[in-house]
Image 1 (cartoon, rainbow, N blue to C red):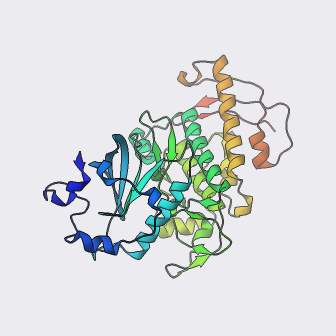
Image 2: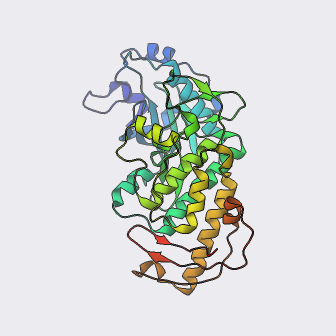
Image 3: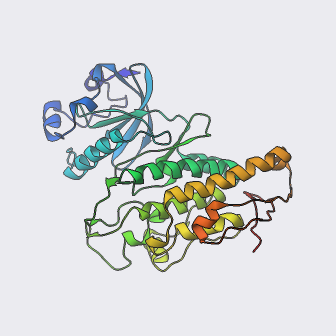
Length: 368
């Protein structure tokens, strides 16, 4: 590990996040942002290690803070060697919002620094991103129970954020991190998150494949144009993530951003082929064209929790169910989640059939 006080003395051959700045005093002067001193870390307690990932606006390193493993996000300057006002604003908003949230499925905020660069320090999630995990097991998929467990963790994190008035706006697999054993998921990257308000917000915020249709237009628009939308944009993004968890495929794979925007705006959605039948209502409602038709995350969490509960009940009577090639079983069950999302009258008896295929198993079929 390399102590931060020696960053400026690093040899050029080493990875130095601050090597672009010849005058550290000028650099610090250019990057004045307003952050509560209580949120600042003690640089003498921070060490930086290997590069974990690189994005267009930031670099993420593994490190230690007070001997605790951490992730260190360093905001990159633009080509003029200055951090743009937009990146400063994004950094400041991310620090402030992330410092407010405390949830078991949201990455833990440790602190921030404005010198010798804009840095955000969080707990280290050594299991990598959900995106990399899915890529690593293709063409196979996680079993249905694990996929739904991830989905429930994501939904509960979003339920918490919406309850305190925060919209994430960039929910996607690369912003979801896994624990070392890759059994638990946590939401990260609050760079595009903002507090929900009645005023208009910037359009085109997020990533096209996961972006709700109300956030963009198929007609040419100017960069920075604003319009009104609400927290239901996150519900749409969640539907794309859930679809990926069930299929281990990329939404609208092979299409350009313009083609994805056009497909979404014209009400095209990913294929439901081979999606477990009892989950179809959830996907259909979450990616509905009209945001008002999409459920709240509280309802989504209840829906998924009920399916998982039923699966655990079934496992008690059929412990090797997930290991069998073509298992089938029948049992009675009620699903309050389905009633939430489909607005059906409660049924006292539902027949369910499970069968496995290449990527997932059907957990149960509702008989109408």
